[in-house]
Image (cartoon, rainbow, N blue to C red; front, side, top):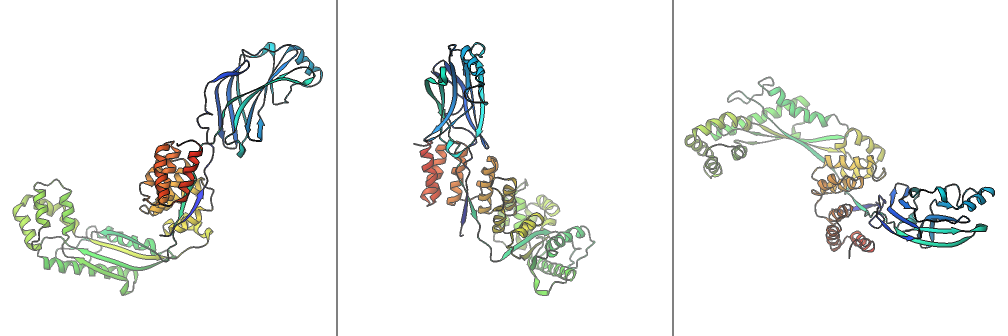
Length: 477
């Protein structure tokens, strides 16, 4: 199947990697030690948290000390709000000159005589792309008279790296030339002994006939649907001679065909029939799943090459007790009619119309149409995720449906659902890559490399790019 893919970038910085997480930092900034240091991305903001121990900071009367966290990467830098500690004379100097702090209104200022021993520092700044990989330093500036810096010291606290979430690859399913669908089931129509005429009110026939009618009605009233065939296959149970059962199966199926044709005024050629004189496969399934005595021996008889009448007679003669049980509990269910309604659905090309059909009759959409409407929504949004989850409900065994649903769930952060969908996503390069992407999100980098390397060998270029990025970010040797 031809595959068209689109890639959803998911490098979202949902937290810092080791090296920027909470940790103890030795005292290297004169007089200051830092603990519980943490840099974290929260949506549009980057937050810096730490506890500053200021017990070792001594400030002469005519000086001030300014402690400034500073993000630095190449030629880019940003100073976060400072903590200022002012000696007595320097404090009053700034007050007399109308300057409350050195760095501005965002500064947290203390007189040296009243400074706390510890400060819980917590500030946020708008995140910019260059901050990925930036070093966070603590700058100490000692200020003397005349508003001049007399000493400076920089201490590196750590580095902020965005949490690495690889780009996800969604596959565009190939458009169907003809959207052919079917509904199927079984109905257990009761007939009086040796009769082939249908009596709608006989026993449970109203309910059983209603099953077939409900299936037909569910599509017949849809203006976008064209019914192309109704297929019926009648079965009888093995008691009585085979030839008689054959006639019953043919006659009863013919009666059901006429009942449906007249009810819906279908053309003659729309309804096709088949028959199975005796449902030995159904009997075998029942016995195999039962706790009957002599189950193995009865199964051997069912599987034998004996004539059907001889086979049934031998079971009855050899195991009469088990036969009576089967006659009462199993044989009635072997007298049934399987049915299938085949129909075509017109194709949709307008996305707004697809949205309407998605809300009203999602079963009418093809996987390609689900894909087209998903592109209207922001990746990761509830609407985006819901489209792919609805698609996989309509096509539960389709590999591409499960792959795209897995990626949508992964993008949404639901790893349990992701794993469930990936189990049915097949072994395409895109599916193997998705398993590697999930392993990265779960920080199982060794397992991720195994999947990504496999996808790379299969010729999936995105896997090679992701492996390279993992190496650059030092998640693999």
